[in-house]
Amino acid sequence: VSKVLNNHGGASKATQARVHEIAKRLNYSPNIVAKSLKVNKTKTLGLVVSDSSHSFFGAVIKGAQEEAAQLGYNIILANTNRDKENEKEAINTLIGKRIDGLLLASSRLTQRSDIRYLDSLNIPYVFLIRRSEDKKAPFVGNDNIAGSKAIVDHLIKTGSSRIHFLNMDKASTSSADRLKGYTAALKDNGIKYDPSLVYNTKPDIQEGYTVIRNILESGQRMEALFCGCDILGIGAMEAILEYGLKIPKDVRVCGYDDIEFAAYLRRPLTTMRQPKQSIGVKGIENLVARVEGIDDKQNVVVLKSELVVREST
Image (cartoon, rainbow, N blue to C red; front, side, top):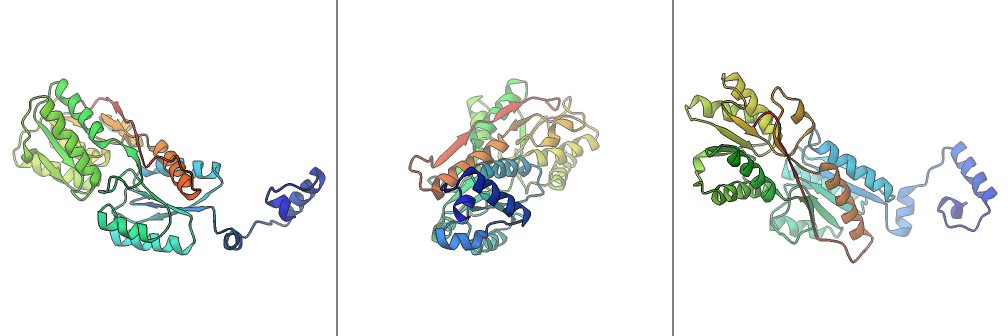
């Protein structure tokens, strides 16, 4: 019976069929915990997500779960609500469940001191979407610098020279990289960087609305706006339209990520499409390679994004 259920051979097809039929009738399933004590593997991976309610993460989670199943692994999902201490608590809980490896999606544990903590856990881990400050740390995501630069290049080459940038909070490495892309595009096009046009806030619709509403009410002239994520762009566009301005006639707006709703807004949003599902798939591939000790794994996997031009520009 053990050989049949563990696919080790040594039994006739008739015996295999009989064992599987009885197991199904008895609703038998292997005791994964007991099995893990023997083989020192649970075939379970932890996926820690900064905010699972954020529409961006749905495709990432889907890609990760489907690829894990293909490779014979299960996933336990944990949500941190963008809080660093919650993230550490979630990781410690997952470690207690004897996971074999850990995926960190948009992690807050990106400082070099955090790498020492993760290394002390003695299990493989891979960062998704948001890289660590330690550029040698395992990472799968898109090129935020190149993606941001392409967005701003698009705005400049289609007629805008004064470009506000509503970026995510400064603590995020993705935010820092998108600022680098923004400034690089300005420099390449001979436009002086003006820090008074750059704002930082948490990725939230209400925050996007509030910051842009305040800018407009202060009397600042706005002709183009690049938002560090689509969520900010949704709130920003609502503030612009509510203020009586037209998009794109008066203000042209871009986002980043291409979340599902971006194409269905009152003014469909021009954005940079991240390969979200592929990030989940490649993250699992990379992590499983580490769990199984495969030598030719890549330490850093950077996937291409795609500029999607819609009615907002």
